[in-house]
Image (cartoon, rainbow, N blue to C red):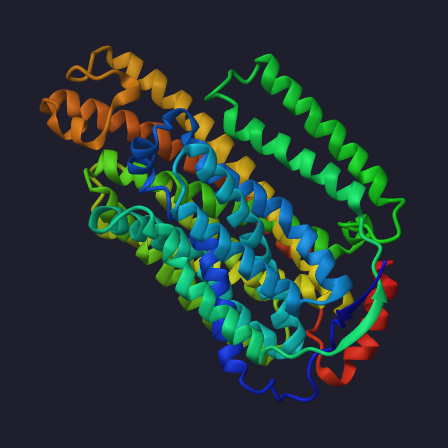
Length: 520
């Protein structure tokens, strides 16, 4: 079909940024924050939500629906952005996200809430991808690093701020405001973006990969269901999980076959032949998927069960991670822009990250909390050196008219890695903890092993409490140690990451032609 669209522009001439760029950047940062925040903001509000809506059996889907829709939407937004332009697509994603947020706040039962969370996720996946791609449209590659650094830090900030904000809202107002808080911020981002973001127009013929999109959606949905249900709703060897695993494999294989044949593939498989894309994507899956998300997901449990902190306090104790991440992300971004090279910072981050995780594997119930915070800050510093520099490397490796597809594909695989990593770590932790608690052999003050809460642990007799605390500590810290060699694999990969010079504007056109030929 033929449609009037926005042309993906080259970066602006010289070093001059677009007029009102500060407002544009603020709108993009708010949009990314909203998208990342809504992955975690409901976690502390969930007990209240399921109690009001009578939906305990569907509790996990409140989070899963958002992540699933966002993950499926990422490559779609990236490809469509390259085909038809990003400005109106970004505004549409904002509108969908705001609409889903408003409706989720009015949900009267769990099916409604889950459906509206999926709608939120469809918009949220677009916000995450389009914000990074629009920066690529408006900012020259050489300058881009100093703007991408803070964007990377947004993910860490959201991981900590989400549970804190959700808990505060639930305790002081109403859980529905965890969704309604997006309305004024989203409306402001829409107004600023509509007024300030200006991109040229043209007419193109759009040949969208509908079959590939459908197969990708089936593969991702099946995989996330395997990771979500395996070991919890169903045994890993149950027919349901085995069938879902088979469906994941079959649909993924068919997706690859389709992508090799269509004119405009959703995720061009030739990108995998680009060493920058393939290595950067693998590092992201390993370092961010396993390193960041696995630690953030289970460290609060350790803080509450072993140290006895409240949910709010355990969230606040993750702030050193955000501080370390923001410090190195902003600093490395400025230095990368100045030097025009990114590889050294990625390698440094991939050395610091496993060091931080190894330090966390040495934690004991008697470890002072200040030392724990120091270890968390070290891990965050490593993440800040890696996250957005990988995205920058990928964007620099492809011509401007493929930046959206490359960015979304990189983020897509990182989300897949995070989903699988958290599920695997969770399954190992749960099995170890179950065996450890069974070995204690008690009813834990009237509660079963599956019903132990931080309050129950604090109420136990001293000897029994120490045994339960040791069970939690000994079940989690060895997993951190087991993650170290996996993260070191990412360190080894970083050594082979091509260190291409960031393109200046005067060689933008020449660089795009060379990159297009190399990627093909």
